[in-house]
Amino acid sequence: MNSVNLRQVPSVEKLVQAVAGAVGLPRRVVAGVARAEAARIREQVVAGGEGVTFAEGVSRVRDELQRLERTALRPVINGTGVVLHTNLGRSPLGPVVAARVGAIAAGYSSLEIDLETGDRGRRAPLVDHLLAALTGAEAVCVVNNCAAALVLVLQHLCRGAGREVVVSRGELIEIGGGFRVPEIMETSGAVLREVGTTNKTTLADYERALGPATAAILRVHRSNFYQEGFTESPSLEALGELARRAGVPLIDDLGSGAMVDTAALAALEHEPTVLESVRAGADLVCISGDKLMGGPQAGIVAGSAHWVGRVRQDPLFRVLRCDKLMLAALQETARAYLSTAGDAIPDVPVLTLLAQKEQVLGDRAAHLVDLIGKQAAVGRGLSRCGGGTMPRSAVPSVTVDITPAGGNVDALARRLRLGDPPVVGYVANGVLKIDVRTVFPDQDSALAAAIGAALATALA
Image (tube, rainbow, N blue to C red; front, side, top):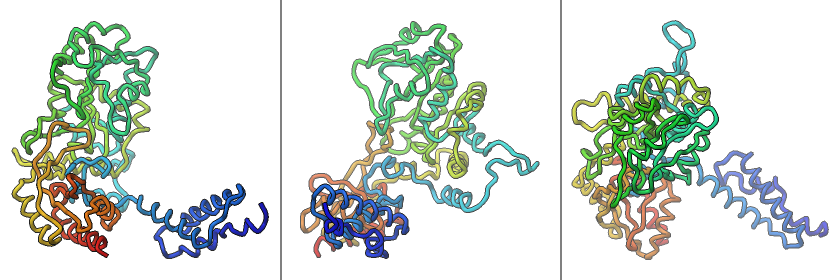
């Protein structure tokens, strides 16, 4: 190594100045990326390698900044047909809910004050009352996601050495992101008492496992897979009766959070609702707010006033509690359900998207094809609920099928994802498909323009 070689390391300040204005990131972020790139070049030179030209260094910094900027959270047009797409943020919020969240976010709010007395009050108590009315439970408390709700409940019930939770081996499932129910349970301090087999667990299996160390019986709903064939499991009513005789609570980790009969929306299976679990005898029911309920990410614990009250007093509840934006969204989502009369579909986007008629989707797809041109055609597809719910259900849908003149469908899909706005579809049988069911009607013009721009880029 010599001083001549080190001159090949570009100045951080010069790199920053060279890319200034080319990206929209703050200068401190640009400087950090430039500094990291200069350090990599220095290491390369010190190791005896060749340096890079200043232009190459600038290009590397610019590429990294553009890659970083693409990771920013921003709106996306969902053309996948998956209504609860976890990677795309799951439940979209309706305009009324979004407006209330915006109003709460933009200023101060009555989050934890009793406006009548001026004293400190309980955090957003109306949310709990609305959710209790919606679920049919005596009481409700809310934390930041469903896994947190389960950990909170188990941690409270299993405080002390050797406290057991009885659960079927057929329900020790893995949820999204590689998280597994046994690991979540162990994190809470619970000792798993597994009963039955993968495909068959009887009421007698549960009964034999009960003893002085039993803290609770847990039923985990198989919301992201299904079993067929030689299977057996006791009803929730039977488990509830067994739990009452044993003097322990029954926990139903329901997960999906359905509040209405999903079979009445479209060609969907019936997903158990929170009301059904409460009526069946579950003492504590854990659900997600951002799945079939159609609200924000949240974990809702609904059940008896006795058990929910105990859980709420646990010190861990404060650690897991919701912020004002999540509570505002839950409040208005619950209102949307409770203000809906009869069999009408609540004004919740997840439900209205699933319930759309094929004829309406077909008309929109035909209009989109007219706007896009000859490289597009109306096609068929199957929409799914997604988000780890109703794995057997698929709803017939209508797609816009795009076959680029150059034939490179994967390249077209990438250009659409990197566009403004980003458009995410899927490739099937050599065609890029955009499922109209998950595209909001007011996005149609932007979608057509984005596809047109991506196709024009391919021809350039």
